[in-house]
Structure formats: C-alpha cells, structure tokens
Length: 180
Image (cartoon, rainbow, N blue to C red; front, side, top):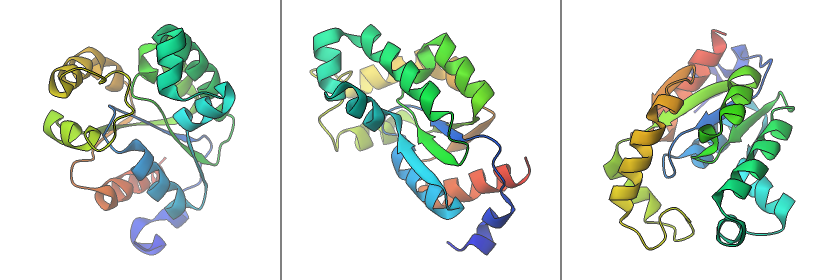
C-alpha cells in the first residue's frame, strides 16, 4: 500500500484515532497497519493496562473483577487520548463504561470495526487469554456481547467491516480521515 493510493498525505489529525469493536475484530492488527501508513504511533490500551497494573488482563479480571479492570481501562484510555498523533486500539468492552465512551467520542475519531460472529469465533480461537471466553461457548458469548454492545459501537463516526482484511479497512479509514 502506498501513501499515494491511500491519500494518507492528506490526513492531518487534530485528535487521535480510536478503534472500537468486538474482540477478534482486528483492532490491533488494523491499528498497527493504519498507524504505519499514517506515520504516527500505535498503542493498544490493553498493553498499556498491563504496563500500568503490572499484571495481565486475565489476572486483573480474576483477582479484582471486571469492574476494577474497566475503571483502570477508563483511566488509561483518557491518558492515551492526549496523544493526537496516534492510533489507539481499545478493548472490546471499553464502550460499556459511559464516561469512557463519551471521552472517546469527544477526544478521538471513533471508528467501529465490525465483523460477523463466525469471523470473530474463528479469530478468537487463535488465543486462549480472553477472560470473557474462558470456559464458555465462544459463539454464545460473542453473540450475546455483540447484541449487548452494538448500540454502543454504533455511536462511532465511521463503521468499517473488517472481515475482508486489513488493506480494505485501512484504505476506508484513511479516505474518511482525509475528508475530515
């Protein structure tokens, strides 16, 4: 992908790009590709939470619970929104905290990466460190989470289907950002 084909030279960010969506939708992969194409930094909020807490996401969930994790996640995302020249990959449940969702809507270009449940099931099966799927039927959990979160994800300014892979998604996002 060249910058010319993607219009990335026409993108001037006044705020960061925050990617939201379900686990397995490709926020980290797409985020890295997008940041590279734009020549800006990439950060994964889950990685930053791990650095802040000194524990894995799974351990935070196990020892302190989801509410404590979401509180820490909100604080980390608020800090990350301060870097205007960045792409932020957020956790799938970050939108479930109203204050976090509002901060992202105001402080970032909020992009919802979508995909159907079959793709999510296939992609999440590649890793075994997803606390919300541990010991459960992934299809049932992912379907229920998607149903519960869709109205929150829909508040993003751009929705992009990530099922077809990274190149298409990056082109779509860059074209959108070039018009902002």
